[in-house]
Length: 149
Image (tube, rainbow, N blue to C red; front, side, top):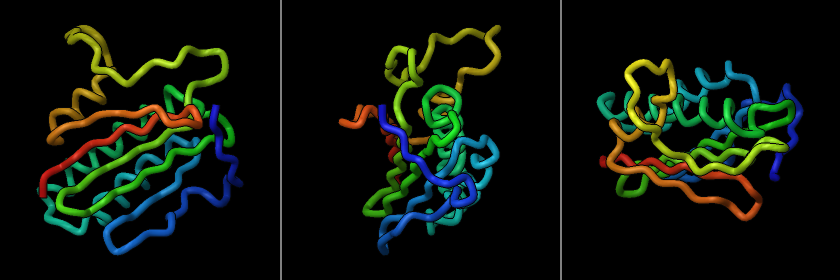
């Protein structure tokens, strides 16, 4: 299991970027989700009609990482990156499964009108061109969502 340890006071913090890539490292605090959402809306450097769906996807994917992985535990982190080359590509990387839990891939659950919550990936799918995920060698998962410019 991968887990980045950073002093709580050091998070959230911007990652070293390039002219086409921006990044943010968040801690395990759910309050960091709002910070990531505002950051993403500005980091897109694009029209409002695209910034809002991207910020929604950042919010949902970051919340999922904090609620369902080791990223939400003390010392956990979530890495959020936006790449602006040709299209907008959002990547959210978690610290992997919590100790003692099975690794489960991100998936959209069957639609249940009586279930409260559990629709984060469904929202992401609705606002982006496509999404996918990869398991990283360190045990973390990166969920990627692509938005046309």
